[in-house]
Amino acid sequence: MAAGLGGVLLLSGCGGGGGDDEATPSPSSSPSASAPESASPTGAARAELQGSWLATSGGQAVALMINGAEAGLFATGGTVCSGQVGGAAGTPTVRLTCGGGDDERGTGTVDSVSATTLKITWEGSVGAETYTKAEGGKLPSGLPTGGAGS
Image 1 (spheres, one colour):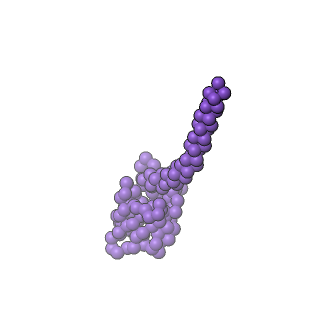
Image 2: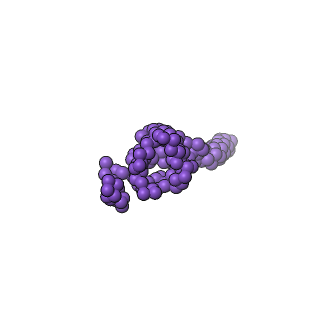
Image 3: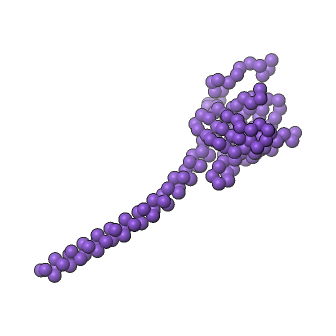
């Protein structure tokens, strides 16, 4: 009987040791689990980039549209650009080719994006711009009115 009890204790000790072994992979799987989480904001940021964004810059109205990996930009004064949205090192980048050799907004790095605001720093002379998301075909509040056709 003592041998039987010793065997049970030995087995439960092995089971306990197995539990310790199982606890060891748990912490090592935590860094693996945090890697996709750190990648998630990039995916979320890319999803938040989708849509129509409006800004005023240098007295011009600027509309930036992003649909999937495609981008288009239009500004009063005749600027028309098209291009792609990509990313290097997890940072979304907008690369545009504009008509007439205009390269003020050729390449832009997304500084931040939320449900309502997009901040991009363009490598050209424009520099940083802040866009407001246009929802449901409506212009966001706070944009200047009149003046464009007058």
